[in-house]
Amino acid sequence: MTKRIGILTSGGDCAGLNATIRAVALRAHHGHGWTTIGLRYGTLGLLERPVEAVTLDPDRLSAALARQGGTFLGSTNRGDPFAFPMPDGSRKDRSGEMIEGLKQLGLDGLIGVGGDGSLAILRKLLGPSGIPFVGVPKTIDNDVGHTERAVGYSTAVAIATEALDRLQPTGTSHERTMVLEVMGRDAGHIAIAAGIAGGADVVLIPEIRWKLETVVQHIAQLRAVGRTSALVVVAEAAGQSDEAVDPAADAPDHGVGDWLAKRLAKATGAEARATVLGHVQRGAMPTAEDRLLASALGVRAVDLLAEGKGDHMVAWWNRQVIDVPLAKVVGQSRTVDADGTLICTARALGICLGDAV
Ligand code: F6P
Image (cartoon, rainbow, N blue to C red; front, top):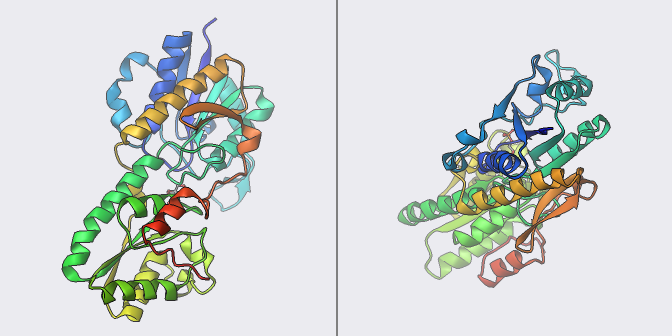
C-alpha cells in the first residue's frame, strides 16, 4: 500500500525551506514510492475544512525550487494549537481540530520543518495522534539544540556579512560609526559570525555582558591610531545582557541598534548611523551551504520515517547527518559559547566584544 507522508513548514520563514520540501518529496517518491502531501501555512491549514493541503508532484519539483527563498507552502509563527489566538483576544485549545485535520489527510507520518519552539509544539500535538513525527531544524537564529547548523542560518550570515561589506565604504567616506543590528532572537550566532567575516570592529551579543564605556574606549583607540570610521554589529537581544542598556526606555520602536548609535555619537563625538537589517536576513536565495544542508536533512528525515524512527530530529553534526531524540532537543536553546572558537577568534583579531568586566 502506498504510504502518504505530510510535510509542513512552521515558524518564521528562512532561506532553504523550499529545498527541504523538495528533498523530502523526491526522496519519498524515488526512494520509497510514497506520496507527499504539503500542508499549507504551518498548522493553520489543518483548521480549514477541507484541510488546506496539496499533493506534491515530484515531476514539478525542479532544481529551480531549491533556489527560491521563503516557503511555497506558507508558514506561521502565530498559531500555537494549545493556545490559539482568537479574534476576541482570548486563547483557545484547538489541538483537537488540528489532529482531526491530520486524520482527514490519512497521513502515515509527518515531517515538520521548524525551530525549537515549533518542533516542541508539533511533538506535543502529534504525540497522542499515533502519527510518527520527524523534525528538521530550521532557523536563521541557529539556536536549535543538538545540531551545529539549522537551515537558513548560512544565508542569514551571508546577508549580514554583505551588509557590513556595503556599510564599510560609506562609513569610511563619511567618517562615521556604522551600527548594524542583526536578528538572532536570544542568541548571537548571526552577529558573531557575520562580525568576524565582515570585518567588524565591535560585536555585541546577548551571551557576553557588555557596557557602553568599553565600546566607546575601543572606538577612541581606533581614532587615536588614525581610523576615522568603525563598524559595529549588535544582536537584536544584546541589550538584555547589560542592565544599563534599556532600549525600551529611550527608543521603544527602534531597538538596540538605534539606541547604541545615538549613545556612541554622543560619547565619541563622531557621527553614527544605525541600520536594522531585519527580515532582509530571511528572504534571500539560499546559499549553496543551506541548499546542501536542506537536501541532506530532508532526505534523512524521510528515511527515518521509513525506519519507523519517529519522535526524532535530523541534525548536522561533525560533517554528517545524525538523528537525535526530540525529547533531548525541546527546551534546549543553543546559544553562543562564550569560550568557544568564534569568540576566541574574534578576540584574537582584536574585535571588541564590549566586555563589562
Ligand atoms: O526566529 C527567527 C526570527 O527572524 C528572529 O531572528 C526574530 O527575532 C523573529 O523571528 C522575528 O519574528 P517576526 O517575523 O514575527 O517579526
